[in-house]
Amino acid sequence: MRGSTREAEPLQRRSLAIREEGGGGVGPKDPALTRDLESYASLLRKMRRDREAIEIEARLGATHLGH
Image 1 (cartoon, rainbow, N blue to C red):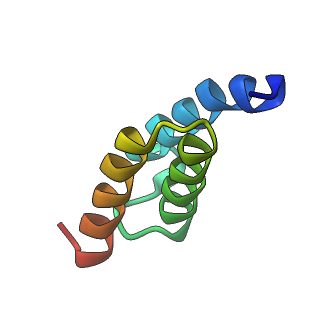
Image 2 (image 1 turned 120 degrees about the horizontal axis):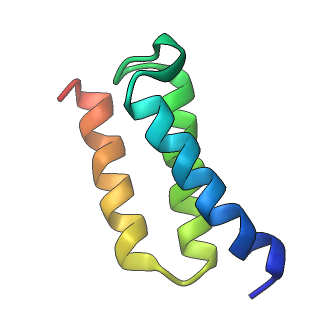
């Protein structure tokens, strides 16, 4: 695994946490949150962490449904 991928994971996780906590005034249907969820799931898949990616994608689905 490339170092940049490994280094990116905690940064993306933190960005996602900030958005989910309401940082920047975003809500569950905010495009920025959707983008972060998609990006994080993609990164997890690149790292062969498919189970975690599936969990994130499930949250993404719930976000699109308004849950």
